[in-house]
Image (cartoon, rainbow, N blue to C red; front, side, top):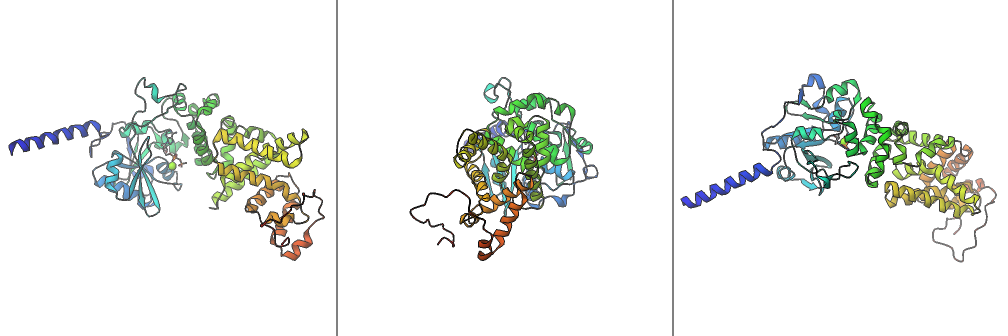
Length: 459
Ligand code: ATP
Ligand code: MG
């Protein structure tokens, strides 16, 4: 019996030792450095009622189980700025497995750095274990030659977690229980001053992850914060590092940039910092053509308004607008080389969308929609015969028409064309027939058989 007890005791000790070595943090025992300043509600002004109940339940659940848990990142920053956060992220010293054990409805996602999604109804709260120092010295496998971090998957302390975040205003931790904000990098002061400042050595941080330059521009436009001088200075010089960023990551960031409700400011800030070459290599061409600039400005302003009015926006439509003038120029180039209008447009559309697919790894379904929108445009100018009846039945007619409207508003086409289509769309069949203009478009070769998508008039 004594032997058995001794054996159990030994197993227990070994387990404790293993836990001590391998767990990122010991349960319940804070190991904060004195480096954190702690601010009370009077200073940070965050109203707990503005926090999603799901986020509060998550921190509470973890804290009750003996772990540390904070609301972190964009949400704390937005709350302090009096803005409504997009989502609430939680940082904790619990490992993903430990988080899983606390919440029945949760799942671990990601292979590289595992995070936990805790589910409350249709809300998902993302819980991340504090991340540690990404670089063991001389660990070449984790860093590319340019200094870009390839892997970043080590657990760490809260202080280390704060260090690896990008901007001081993004490294704030709010504890709903005490209503305190923990601040390791003077983020509270920066928010009050309206400044966006990179944590640590600016050049190193941009080299580690060049996307941070895009984030600086985007967040500054979105939040109305000024990028501090030292954080801004190297951007123009280091912009070319964006070329090494995987296209899928760039695409993700581009979507955030253009679908944030501040696309216009973001695009001109990108241009001002010379970052548009890296991300949308064609954007500079667009802005340099007077018509192109007008068109893109209208498209971006329009997108911003739709987002502010909570209306849906389509990324494919937006990218189609950004590149339209490039398509136009390429189309004209091929026509100038003797190509007929239709094949010249097809060639131009594929050429431009292929460049975009390569640079930004735009998903195929977006490229297809973009080409549909572009391909429809010449058809709006044909207002005779059966053509308008066929066009109006097109699956993407609405997008095609909105695109036409932008072209008219930007002065590329006469406004009367969009007005004609507006009237045509809202008219009954008799009125539509009256509206038709003499059919001057070249006749298509007669088809042998009528197709099934014929309009009622054709049937
Ligand atoms: P948004 O309001 O657009 O979501 P955000 O700052 O919350 O802005 P997220 O992409 O949601 O952006 O990132 C959450 C947090 O993760 C950030 O606040 C920041 O602390 C950290 N973070 C995100 N991207 C980086 C990065 N490239 N380098 C370092 N830290 C990052
Ligand atoms: Mg966020």
